[in-house]
Amino acid sequence: QEELVESGGGLVQPGGSLRLSCSGSVNIFRMYEMGWHRQAPGKQRELIATITSGGMTNYKESPEGRFTISRDNPKRMMYLQIDDLKPEDTAMYYCNAKFEFPSSVSEFWGQGTQATVSP
Image (cartoon, rainbow, N blue to C red; front, side, top):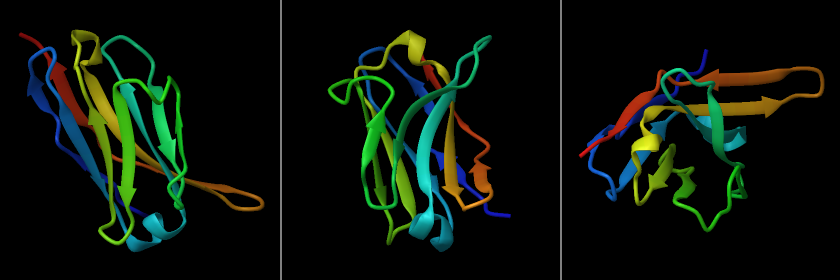
């Protein structure tokens, strides 16, 4: 069982920035597509962005938006930079890793890191 560990959340004022981090194993960072999701209180978990092992990114919203996903495979770290934070960004942020084998899917989730945006 692979383990993903998020960090970097906290209490931030509107307009501020956060950089969330996710660490994992060598195997995860060698093979898996990874992504960031979030779940706000009372809402469903939603995808923010994904990044392949080769660094190709895909954002749910425009890449010119406030979120930037990146990964450093040798350091076994993935990041989510969030700028111009808004109160509606308050959520638990989750790291995800996924690999599609020919007949199965391997997927792992972290425990999440809480980000709260408030004056």
